[in-house]
Length: 378
Ligand SMILES: *Cc1c(COP(=O)(O)O)cnc(C)c1O
Image 1 (cartoon, helix red, strand yellow):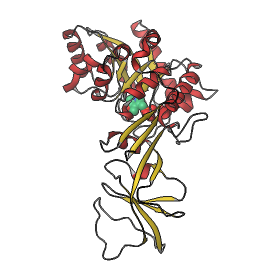
Image 2: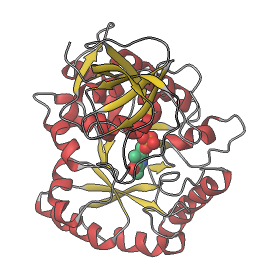
Image 3: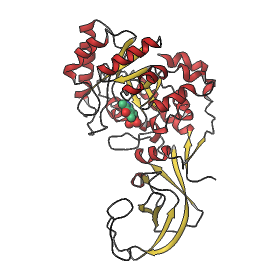
Image 4: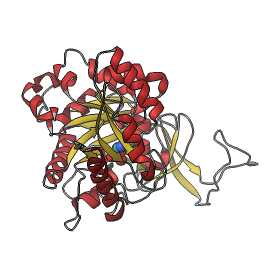
């Protein structure tokens, strides 16, 4: 079989998504399925939708566009698509054209979206993102009311709601305090402007522990945007497996191209390697060393969970060097790894890694989706 490859088990992804959708529904929280780690994979988006997500989201218009245009998939043309990264000014026309909703923090951009939406005779919906402490995107809470005031005066823009994103840049944990602030801000906006916000999107996979713990006050939060937890089956604060979810829905398989007994210490003077300073190595005498035909161009070598008895020693662009303490590996043999988020994103992005989808239960293709449509619309 072709190598290297990602083996993507759509049944497991469906199962993970369905579990999270069901558990969160008990707290009246809907799920937007985030496809960015899979580069907007139609297959994965389809599994998300089957599992009951109420919309799809991605950080890049380049991923959303093919989903929207995917063949004759009527389905994707009706599913609410959210751009979850603030639009580039240079892309507002495409944002209006290919998405229904975008997350925003800059009035300048929202004005352009309004202008474009008018030109295209569409209504563009926005979520205003609020800074809650992680110091990535977001309007400072004190400025929010003023921004809302400007936004609701704009033609062809509909303020769908507000949102926040934590645990991405600084690792700030979603908790009772910051989530309560988001709820309070929702109530403030509603009372000042006498309106109702449809969506209060509390965050990403890092919010699951807060959302699913029995004593949480959910307040006004009614949506989460989930990618990693669905694909990898782990919460993202400590990367612990989530009960009942599969952590091996996606596996990376690579092929051995050299297998020898070599010294563990290099010979000769040591200067820089292809990727900067050489890492110190310990002398373990002779070791069983093998090379896999995959490299830093395709994966993050630190983000691969190795099978037992296998250690990653190092990597260059096209070579992954491993040590096998138990068995000799054979040339042509394949090894499978679970991946962390960073390694997954790289492997998904690499054109050298084939993506092989499987579904024993046969997740129906996207166009079989008609009956879901009314459900996924709001
Ligand atoms: C990436 C991202 C998400 C999804 O994060 P996961 O950890 O994959 O669940 C949600 N919202 C925003 C704004 C993002 O950038």
